[in-house]
Each structure stands twice: as structure tokens, then as C-alpha cells.
Amino acid sequence: MATHLITGAGSGIGAAVARRLHERGDDLVLFARDAARAKELAADFPGARTLVGDLSTPDRLSWALGQQSPPDRLDSLLHIAGVVELGPVGELTPKAWHGQLAVNLVAPAELTRLLLPQLRVARGQVIFVNSGAGLGAHAEWSAYAASKHGLKALADALREEERPNGLRVTSVYPGRTASPMQAKVHRQEGKEYDPARWIAPESVATTILAALDLPRDARIDDVTVKPGR
Image (tube, rainbow, N blue to C red; front, side, top):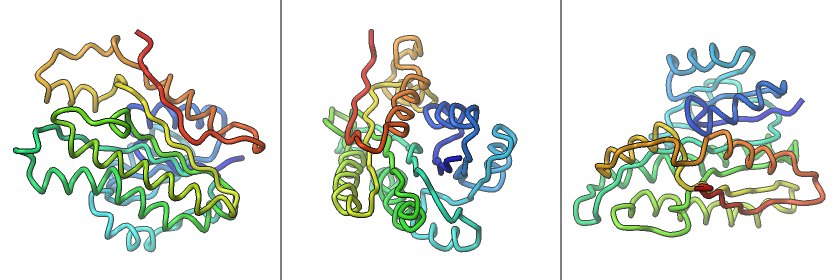
């Protein structure tokens, strides 16, 4: 039975991935921002374990994991959590920049660092759920896109560094996906939100599971998922 640690399992793509892995009987370790959220996730996914840590304060993740019991072996680490705040460069504050860089880039780097020993034991896989914004930035997306461009660089470097240890590293670049985050983006853009126009989280989950389940004689480094409409 494979063991997967997932951030962002509470909604959207993360929840869809967690459901699929839970339904097939894999062992889940769900990362929650606080004890209340951990309790909710444990109720949603019976049998899953939880770890508590605030991704917005990556400097404290080492301490947080040190107070708990991470698994001794990890087959995959799935970075799916993320935050977004739009705005023109001329108006975005340092707080907006720091908040998105912390959750979208620094926290994944730190969690990966802390869990690399367990991933190496399993010759496992790290999956970074990036964004189309990680490949190109548009007006008012500077801070979010910068965090996702950085996430691509993190994945590319990690892939080269850990190849001798047998790790696979995959970046997934979804286009606009029907999720609470997308609803927030539409509010910030002042647009009406119609989830039927965008990719279903389950479709991105299918892509992620394909990368996880690929036989060991191959790897998927990067995959882009775009709306079909």
C-alpha cells in the first residue's frame, strides 16, 4: 500500500486527489493548517492520518513536524495547496507578495527538504501542482505568477539533484479549474463565475494519478492541462 502526503486536501484539486487515493485504499497523510482543520479532514477521509502545520509560516514547519510523527516512508509528496491575490504591481503590498511566496513556494521547498529522507527510502515521487501562471504572467498576476515560476525552478532543480536517489519529480500546470480558488479569482477580477466553463478538479486529479501510477521505466516531468472548451 502506497503512502501519500497531500497538502490542500480540503477542497478543489487536492480534495479530488485525496478522494481517488482514499477510494482505492492507499494510505493518506493529510497536511492541515490547524487542529480544527485536521479534525475535519480526518472525518472526511476515515483512516487517514493528519499532520498540522501552517504553510504561511514556513520557518516554523520544522518545529511543527518535530512535535508530531511523520511517516517513516513516503511514496509521494503532493504539493497542491496554494493561495492567490491579484493586483497590479503598482498596488501590491509586501504583505501580498510575502503571503503568496510563503505558501506557494517557500513552504513546498521546506516541506520537501524535511521529508526527503522518507521519499528517498521509497524512491518516491514529488508532484508540484503549479499553474498556467507558472509558465506565463498576465497583468495583475505578478505575485502569484512569480511564486509559480519559482515553483517550476524548484521542481526542475530538485529533479536533477534527486535523480541519483531514484526520485521522480513532476510539475502539473492546470489551466483555470473549477474550485473555491477560482471563485475567489473571479471575484477579484469582477467577473461572474461559471464553474461549468473550467476544468473539473477530477480531471486534474486523473492527470496526477497517471503520473503517480506510471511504471518506473518512465517519468513525466511536466504536463499541462487546459480547459477543453
